[in-house]
Amino acid sequence: MNVKILENSHSKVTKDLFKTPIFMGYNISEKDFFVADDLVEFYHESFCCSYLSGLKNYKAIGCFDDADNILGFLSLYQSSDEPSWYGTQIRSIGGKQVVRMLLDYAINLNEQDGRLKFYTLWSANQTRYLRRFAFSDYNNERYDYFDEYFVPAKHKCFYSSHWHILFNRVLIPVDVIVRCTFLKQKYRNILSIGGNI
Image (cartoon, rainbow, N blue to C red; front, side, top):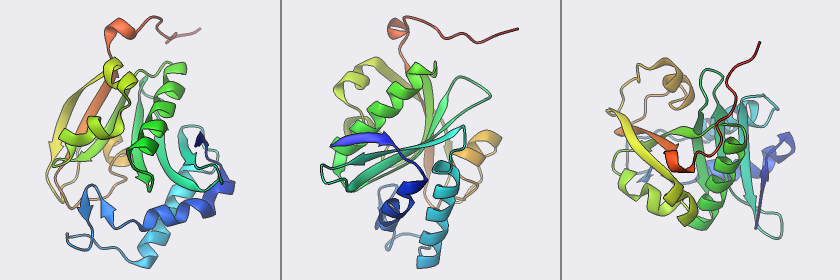
């Protein structure tokens, strides 16, 4: 398997990853989700316009098998307002090995850019499983977290940047938690420069 930054040429291969029956740990046919073919098309097109079009702050990372079939992707936003990044989506058909490879790549990419913390949005019922599933042993040791706040199902987040980036301005039909994950102090060997003239 190999991991790389996705580009506009990867638009077509990512589309099937939007047709998954599981979202935030729930079978969408059994929960209060509305999923139609045109909605899948809408979310895929929105993903491509934001993450595959070469915008400076938006990136997507893909994991491919040896035959160059996509197994999953992680999309992220790198903030201009603070030295942090946002993990906005993970979609995978390859299980935890793929998710761990994607997250390791994203963490390494952002550490090189001086971004030592990130925000994610998770179903409140799934947060206790997150680290066991998504984190490699290496980054599980190096990173810690705290749960920043809770948003009840079908409620609008009132923190502007999180509402726009993590929630994508959508009322999520399940209870969610916004988590801040950060590199532990003992692993912060060199701090990035945060000023200029």
